[in-house]
Length: 212
Image (cartoon, one colour):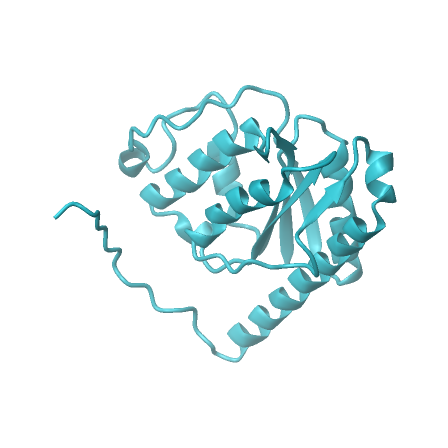
């Protein structure tokens, strides 16, 4: 079993990375593999809402790594999306990236890369805006039928530098608790599948609006 740890920070080894590495270390102790995916500093084009992905099977924008990421996700059993807090929300990079990744997966028929796979969000901040950013990231998962894994507290760390994040003992402990809960859920899911328990039945999607 393998978990993808998504680093939505422009800093490769900053505060968000520090939280994710604590998770990776604990997952390894639980015999769960992991890999950190770094979003980097390249510009991410936002979703154009063109819906061409429904026709061609992937996002029409090809000047970044979104399509490669979606294909990569089919080989992972769980996900943790990490982001710094920028102006009370997730980073602009991760927002643009995940908007296109999840929307193109939905319209292209690739939602099984995400559906029913456990996921979680973690955020890092110097001071505030963490819960708003977590709410934003959690919405990608709840609209995609992904079980959300929690820690003992909201999944956040505080600090203006990696060294300060390491001093956030409660936050770092929660990263370890989150990792153990993720490992536990993955093992339960595997045991259930081995016992013949099938995934939930899929219904045809119904779209409605509020105009009568």
